[in-house]
Image (cartoon, rainbow, N blue to C red):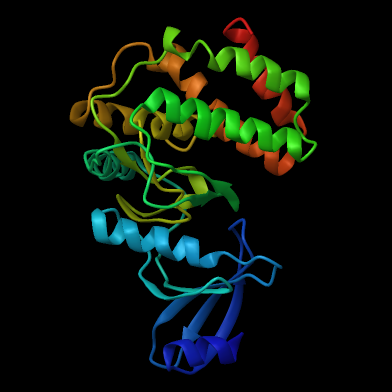
Length: 281
């Protein structure tokens, strides 16, 4: 790996240390002879796809002001990025800063829902065909797609998928079309956000597409990424219609739960069942 990084950057590698995190390949902190520090991901699997992560980070850098690592090299097997300082501990001020950054990201729009190409979430394929209707996109390309992947992998019972399909047929009871598509990071949870003191220093491991910002906001509540300080500030910038915390966030969190079912199975299946039961399915 040292030789590959040196060849890609034209700079010698001084030191390599493993880092935790990431669903794809191995991650390292690399010190370079020019004094800079890089984060290097290596994917030695049969079907490497680190170039997709590189694409997503470059897309965010080119289309938004969201702080993301600078991509120095990207191919399916090797991704080299700038190192961003920080930890996943968020002060009240840092949460407010995160709200500022995500509200600005969500103000960036497109003519339809989806993206110019498919992306990844947690290393899983994430289809993004341009779609005029958010409800159609969320139903077909998020819930039903990932539910069927769960069944195909043997981690989601077919009976649960049948219940999900019935629920998806009635999404209009709870969800409405947004005014316009919003650019989403797509995977905002604790370890994918970095902060130093009162400021957010970076968002990493994106799963980008244009969708409803409420699916992004919902995911931040699933594992307790942010709390009241974040939502108080976000509401000042982009008011959230009533019913989000009471109903819609649980519907939107079905997608990351289905992703976790596909990845890990286990207790996440029951979480999906509990959500469906709550809405009568």
